[in-house]
Length: 256
Image (cartoon, rainbow, N blue to C red; front, side, top):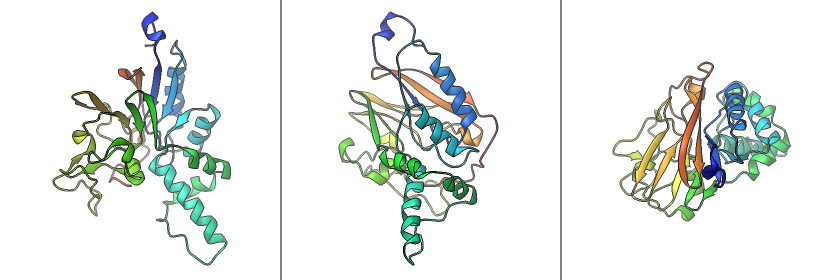
């Protein structure tokens, strides 16, 4: 990878899937990427926080290395929690944000104000090349890429036949008569995304007439793999994966 005259003259971008606190695996895949003999741009697709053993360390590593990062729904949760916590501390209003799990709350308490400010600065999407974009959750096929709703770009999974997001069932399972958004997306933008674990080992590729969607969350925190996709200009060149050291989190249900 990243060898040869042709590739060296093109733009190489590496997009890393959902890290979710798996610092050892994160460092391992970064070491592999560092050895790639070409100039490269590195993007993390969001969800550094929660589930795994060292989420704050993952945030700090991303910041220390100056990596580009997209806002994930888990970062968004911590931003909203901190904002509401600050408001609650200056008034009698109780924090209305959904309570965090104990370990998530402990991790949150280790996030500095600077960390939260950094999370607030993260974008919902990043352009990789021409019509190839990276997002965290996805897009509603009914809407043009530049007219997506913020909350759905962070959280969308399943859509109806009209291409609009449908809420998960109360037990967090897939709603009836829905498909994953990438099955309906027809571009013209190609999209690489995280958020939804289709498989614990292989990324999910959905092709359409003039592009594709690539899901790269292979569930490292669930004992799967941490996956990165390598793009040369707007073409998918290859993927690399690092296996999880262990299963850190029980995959009992989806969350938001």
